[in-house]
Image (cartoon, rainbow, N blue to C red; front, side):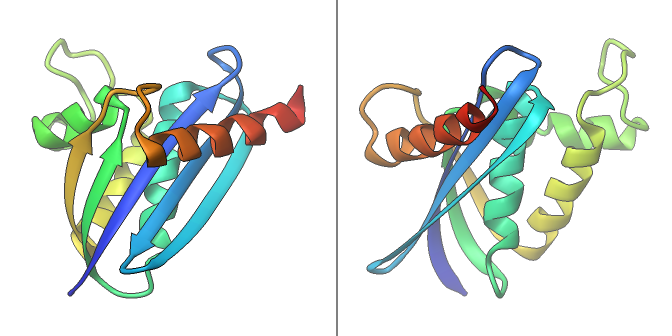
Length: 145
């Protein structure tokens, strides 16, 4: 399997409001930037969309180290919350409905294809690729302002 590093970020002006996402895929010496936006969304949806779109851009199953500043995404995967939510018909431990089920289902499809390790990094803390992703995400939502 090819080993890829992916960096992602999402941003929103208001929550909900116009949002954007950015991703950088790094394979050996090659870098590819991806970004997109939604006119009315939430920050968490943009964080998730960045992960999904980056994974969907891979042309074959890969071993991925995915770095994000989203505790929501990292914890849901690394702590197994999303698997419990799905098993419990998308209900959280407090019996309330899980949010963003459509995106979690899409992300889980991608996680079945790729071997992904999620790594959390503190946002806005000088991490080169996190800063690039944030810039891409902000540029995307600013199209709506």
